[in-house]
Image (cartoon, rainbow, N blue to C red):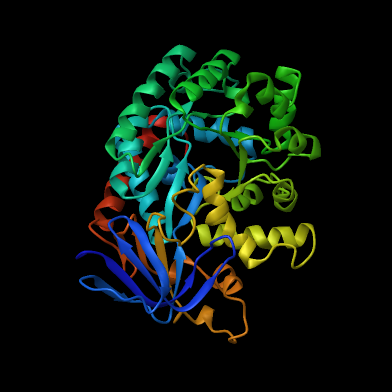
Length: 446
């Protein structure tokens, strides 16, 4: 890039507060940020990319991912949540080392970038966490990520169980190291797995560390009925009541799933720094149910979107997730109850709010970071009458197959559908090699 970069002549889907769409619009990037968005911008000394005939969108945001599970794809089929964890996922996660975790992150990140995802929130792993975080840092993704914290629980392998104080010390060390790699692109999050695998002492320490370091908390909650029932039996209260007693609802607090959130739960968290990340493919695949996304948003709770992990959803495609989110709300409520604009919000402006990054990403506006995805509308799926709403077209016809260019902080990471500066064949080969060794270490029968 010379003194800047100009994306010239596209259909710019800004996702700003009024959802402006600019036909024949330009986006001017200077350094890592958007300098201007408009029509026929006057520029000198900048590199120009012709994006006429293309849709230009904010980079997609996935608010809940497990890149450490990318190499587990297909290894835990046909199970509900708790057997899925205890019989397959925890033994596999316990077998990770830094090498396998690094390459799992790299192959998962490549899948994300090629599909138009520019920012992730990753819940991490235990063993191999340093390798996972290094892989995320090296991938070029923007990320909020951390080590997955656990210290007790039925079926938890010894490799994943640790003293609460040790978990807290280790995660703080990793967090400071991770953010120092690239403070503008990388943020740390505290990631307790869920109530069933974290002691009261661990939750208490997480609250203290979150407040002291100003780190957000990201966990799983209210995903399946069996999980909720076990929490009630163990703690004598439901998950939201437990979180309130632990004080974590007064820190920036994001839960994945929230399928079984009810009106009382929503009343308790309303107007607090609380958000939900909806994972529709995972929830369907594992028989969890359908989250009431319309109800959550009506109560002012920010909702993001995420593919969860390849071990449950089998893919990391944000376009597939946002489309499915809209279809499920239509099934639960009525056709038209969730528009294409609503769906896109989950992966852009509202998804940014859900992970606390909305001041910098989620829309194409002057001053925001230049995280951008360009879709090629020559794809037959985009053939539509000119009267069709652009947001509907992007949400319901958009796919990773149409992704042409991707930018993170103004740096091009995908050009003409291919990774820039990364050898995908090598990443895939190294991930495959590490997977074979990991499965042997895990002891699971495949």
